[in-house]
Amino acid sequence: MLSILASQNPDGGWPYRPAAPSWTEPTTYALLALSLGDVAAEPLGRAFGWLRGLQRADGGWPPQPAVPECTWVTAMVALLGPDRLGAASYQRAIAWLLEQTGEDSGLLNRLHLYLLGNAQAAQAAPGWPWFPGATAWVTPTALSMLALRKAHRTIPSPALRRRLELGTAFLLQHACSDGGWNHGCPRVFNYEAPSYPETTGLALLALHGSDSPAIRNACRLAQVQLASCRSPEAQCWLRLGLLAHAQLPPDAAPPMRPPRTIAELALAQLASAAEHGHNVFLE
Amino acid sequence: MPQVSRREFLEGSALALGLAGCSRRPPSRPDARVSVARAPAYSQALYEDLRRLLVQHRLQVRGKRVLLKPNLVEFDPDAPINTHPLLVHAALEAFRSLGAQVVIGEGPGHRRDTLDMADAAGYFATIPHFEDLFTDLNVDQVARVPFIRPHSRLRSVYLAQSALRCDLLVSMPKMKTHHWAGVTLSMKNLFGVVSCGVYGWPKNVLHWAGIHESIADLYNALPHHFAIVDGIVGMEGNGPIQGNRKHAGVVVAGQDLLAVDATCCQIMGIDPHRIQCLRLAAGHIESRLRSIRQIGETIQSVQTPFDLLPEFCSIRL
Picture 1 (tube, one colour):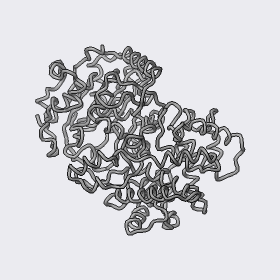
Picture 2 (cartoon, rainbow over the protein chains, first blue to last red):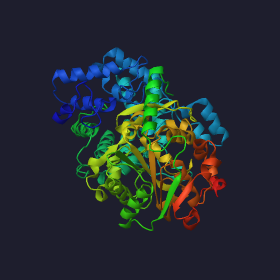
Picture 3 (cartoon, each protein chain N blue to C red):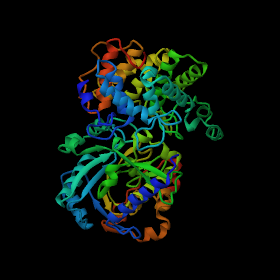
Picture 4 (cartoon, chains in turn blue, red):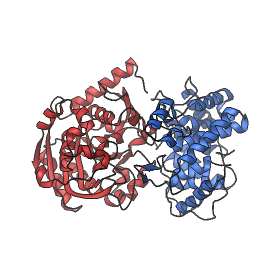
């Protein structure tokens, strides 16, 4: 906590690395981690002031102040919930997320894929892109699902439920042949691409509450990946993903390499808290 | 897609003009000399080879900030995916011997933990104090740079400021085939200066904007560059990740990335006229190719045809 607080910029936000400009993503990670403990009101007030000031008229958030486009980081901010963001700000963020789909799920692209003989890709469920106007990928889809699931618990709606179902279908359709997930490209030119540990863990976390042979298979793979994983980012997402399915073996992870970034530092605290029953992604 | 306000356009144009002014080569006539050096292995001989290459190009880098930009994609111990760390260290020492302040930066497009990947690829073990020298360009501060007369659908792009503020950006790719672009060399390697912090992992906006066109636009937007291509062991077939190891035994270098890449294509047995990003960036490709002059080995003496996917058989020289 103290390391995170010490890295806060004077403007209230957090940088990816100390002594750099503030970005939305590390600021959100820091705030999620700080929500685990008792923190003075002043730094939190500055942080939320910085964050609220960045929200754009369409309800989304840009990755940092110099970029006037809203992106996937909106899902991260929405994870902070209505109590911290304010109800109106939060609802606009959820509305923005509901409107986003990958360019690949547009009608013209589906028709193009169908005419090329790729009927399976033409019928793929829509996910979320990192950046508007681009393809949907695993990480922004998983983060958006976590944000929408949190919203659905507060104010259930058919639109939220439908996007969550489609998001689940997207993730299952984009699983690699080894059972896990990479960035979202499971095969290229008939080559089966391998999964990554960090995206496997995050996708499993987003699939919390779902069960299928594919998910059980992914959990087994995640356990194998965790046994040799020293990257803080990858290890934390694997622990969170396995916990979401009650499949985290005790003492399964090797010693983690020390966190280097604010996000890694915060993720490490969030994963530890989840192991002690306080999972901010699922509450 | 990003829209540029008048103020941003003027600011970006001023930045681009300023960068062009810092360039050592006149923008209208790039120095098209390309060094082709035999390098049979990743050995200590590379340190002297690289020093000699830089001297051949009479680079005036004393006191200048030089950013080495290797190609880090993913790590597989059995596949030559990434620029070899020994070549990067040899370049670091060579530029330092000329009095430059040298740092290393990269922004990989698939995985977020760049330092972990660099560690797995041997950079920490090979390059002393690597972490102190390295900047993850994906989460570096960004500046919006307009594309003047763009080929792609983008009118501007967010680039890492470390790449914009250095005096010389040294693109250090691996010599590889690419299942979308045909080849991936020093121009395609410029994708690594585009911010994933803005566009995500992967930088898929560039694909929707046109992959060949985006490569050409980035080449034109970053005028002050130099290239050192790791062609000692490259990748053929289904590159840039799933292809096969290919020993070509060369290092190719020069101040004009287009000339360097065209030369690499010929070494790989690929017709540079048929590589779309080269055609777009060159304007009149015939005259640009005619202006290239190889130093050191001839292309014929080191030519090593790379296997191509069936979809790319038309680019064979």
